[in-house]
Image 1 (cartoon, rainbow, N blue to C red):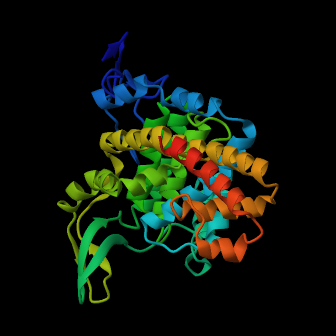
Image 2: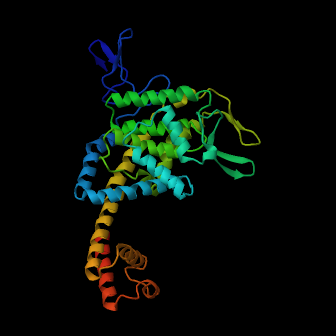
Length: 380
């Protein structure tokens, strides 16, 4: 598209672009690309993406949270951090322990305050979320890939990462692209998709790439003001529940790529890539990833966030109703509710005898009724 005496490299009506564009006087062009020659993603303005933007998901989220007290939202945030952590690790079939949980939650709490898309901070992220024995001081220096063992000494390769010698320039380009989009007013979700999926496609570390990729989603969305302050979208929960769609968003790049990469594996499973592949990682059409991310965010807002806030609100009402029947300590009320929810709204005779033998039959019946009433209301 021509603007005055200059020609746009990308048509802003057809693609996401940065504004204002950088004018290159010698060639008389407006460089409005999302990156440079090291890493330059493109995202088309499809009907799907324009439709999502028209729904104004941040405003829909603000309307959801506006009906709840600050105290409840604070409690919800604590749970959402834990839920996001559990889901992100579970996607990779990694068993959580208390240390891993605490570390990842602590990182999520920083997501809206710091820009983590810098080399030193990405390395620090990797160090903080993996086993200390596999922490790294720089980007990887060997060829890695994503695959699965089919039979003895037989691997099914799903994705080959960039060559280690190509990685420094690619990662410099990714970080520069992030900063360019940050300054250039690019749509928050398009920006997030380009950075987070770009990171996982470059796979700069031996371990932790997927978890960092999902962390970056929160980091960029929060810093772009897409996520309301003090709220976090448990996007990984939506990804986990729709794992086929999440894998498809990754395979939209990896599947056609693997038809081009010439590689071999030695007896120890080490990969050797035989052809020049850097350009295929430098110029990626990330439209499928942006569309997928919009879907995950929408599902998170209208389902995960709504259900969690409604559950907590009903839980608080249930506790108050029970306390009006019997003035028990909070911990005892929590146990009573948990046991009933595990048994279709009724306290089992075993739990009644072992934990609540001081309560009368009438008190227990009324407390059970309070739980069933609010449980059915929440489900409805």
